[in-house]
Amino acid sequence: MFDIYVNILAGILLFAFIFIGRGRQLVKWEGFLFLSIYLVYLIILVS
Image 1 (tube, rainbow, N blue to C red):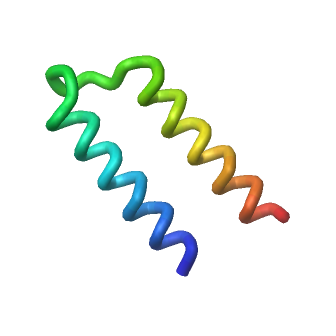
Image 2: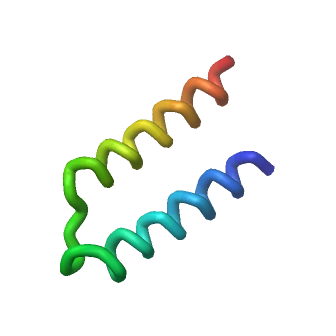
């Protein structure tokens, strides 16, 4: 169930960053946010 919540969160964030942000481009801090969410997700899955 945790996987579904992480995917929903990532989808909502991506939608918000792409369509509300700066012209369908991700800036560095947004990319860093997605990368950090993914790394935390992997750490939780492995442990």
